[in-house]
Length: 302
Image (cartoon, rainbow, N blue to C red; front, top):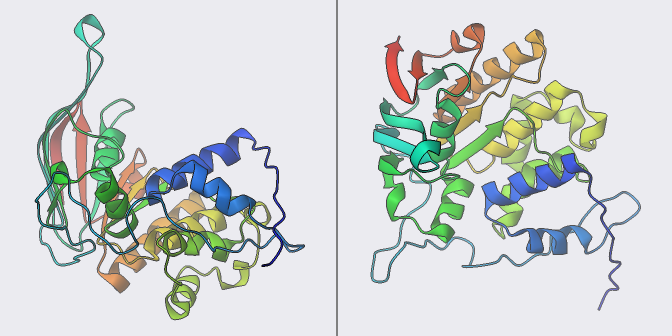
């Protein structure tokens, strides 16, 4: 049996935040992640992904409640791709109550690129997080790619985030001690499956990061890191990409390129894109702009 060298990770706040986000989005516990990342690191800092997932076996589908039929993940056929009906999200109680969403309704067609705009605190990010299965609504109905999120238990939501939606944030949430390619492969590795080399190479080429694949995140520019994050979101070929201010930490040129690449990925894979932004120029690249205020959809512009 090969020897194993354990590594004592002292995480800075950025690394800890990135790991927490990735583990949450891809359905892996921090305990399992630490077991993975601390197993063995060689001189090139390459980490072997010989892991066992917590919970159900890879590829299984889990529904909440006994006796319910299994849920198929990654159907990629539903149109509309996203249906939101009278969605509310309330924080606090009594005098401290705050309504982040107040009866919001929205429909997004399959393959559409929609930008959601609104002032800070308008509810746009809360809406995106609920669509991503990261937060739960107080009331209302959400159907994404034909699945009603209200019937999904925690294990099924983890599979949903790994297969049906791809999540992109303002801060790239790359694991700093993995190469760009290893970061892209994480959803597949967490799923217990070997990444498809042709898919990885296609994404590297599509997003113009082939030359960066063996680089560590610290060796990449902000724009390159965001393109790696986009590739990671696309690697499982999700039905819907959810992007929360993906250009917010980039300069104008890199921001425009990120949006262009999202459109290119939409055209290549038929993926639906829902993007939250405060930038009018970024939003203008979308097929449709949806404006939200005080937790309600107020206008929709073609």
